Image (cartoon, rainbow, N blue to C red):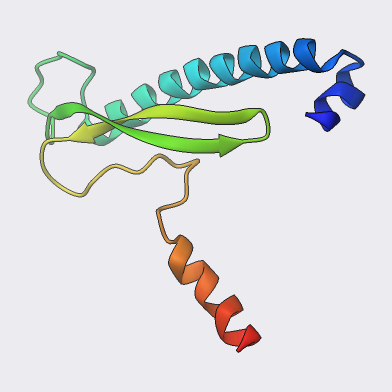
Length: 107
């Protein structure tokens, strides 16, 4: 929060409020982005009936996403069949594989 205070020139409380507003706006923007991406993967808009449709949506999976303005809970669209959907701006959950070389180097 010290960065936010220094960058914005606000007191700590105001900086937290600004960070919460930014996190909310970022979450909404990414929700729209996710909708557009899943439409491309499914080959149809939500509720649209087409012959080109490759599968159907199957609800949402919550996933935490850490950003500079704080954590954001994203609702990632799920597909009913086929390869699971992972948004283009998120890395797949491979933290343990990334950490392994560092652990080996320390040993």
